[in-house]
Amino acid sequence: MEQFIQQVINGISLGSIYALVALGYTMVYGIIKLINFAHCDVYMIGAYIGYYCMKYLGLGVFPSIVIAMAVCTVIGVLIEKIAYKPLRNSPRITVLITAIGVSLFLEYLTMFFVKANARAYPDIKGVFADTIHFGNIVISMKQVLIVVISIVLMILLQIIVKKTRIGKAMRAVSLDKDAAELMGININNTISFTFAIGSALAGAAGVLVGIYYNSINPLMGVLPGLKAFVAAVFGGIGLIPGAFIGGNFIGVIETFVSGYGYSMYRDAVVFALLILILIVKPTGLLGKNTREKV
Image 1 (cartoon, rainbow, N blue to C red):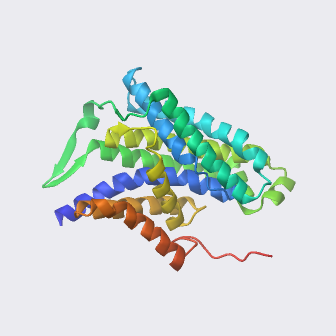
Image 2 (spheres, rainbow, N blue to C red):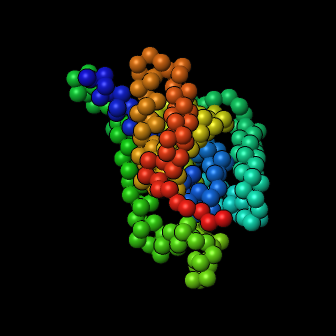
Image 3 (spheres, helix red, strand yellow):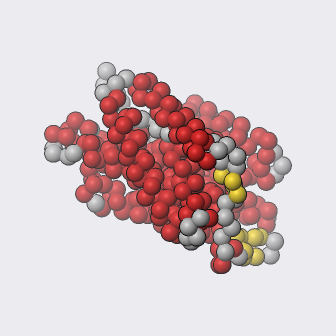
């Protein structure tokens, strides 16, 4: 039983990171129906920004996360303005191929500047280096930090989407972009804000994963990004609560597969789960079937 609880705790820690990345996918898809595959590389850049802030500027965890979120916000907006906005009325396949191209560009541009070798993340000191023991169950303060920050950011996101004017604009654009524009909503600003906030969350996730795994590299976003996409699909892509549920579910499943001696198959299990979801309930756990006029 203790091993079961330990794996659940580990899974929630990992799943919280997936959930933060999944939120970027689900928000952008909800607004403009685009799978932004470059999003996973914004997460990678966030990890490097946090690394340099902690190692060379001597900053603590929270200032590093804030700076990573700010830089990733700017990058997310630039990606939208330069790569996606000119193609907004193009066929979806064109935009999808562009997203893959932007992803590869960010990966190898980063590799050019920081080289391909992995880097060890700076050790965090003080209270975050401690562990809590409940019998044989061990909870590190890093795990507590990850879960708490993830929950706080998701609550803030829900408040922004549900309670603010820009959040109402986002929901309106998601429902009907043309009607929202007729009602005086600035579509361009709303879409840019969506990319900004999604990229900020990815930047925070990048720093948290660096702290958790203590290693980063220019290609670190590829597989976690795909798993975060699976999480978004599982919960219901376009739905913020769905991203949270899907991220934690995928994290727990992956941890259980690894914890019980099948670590070689953990990625296969995650993607097999995606296939199963698409067969059984293509709209995801919280998604609803909608009729499309043709």
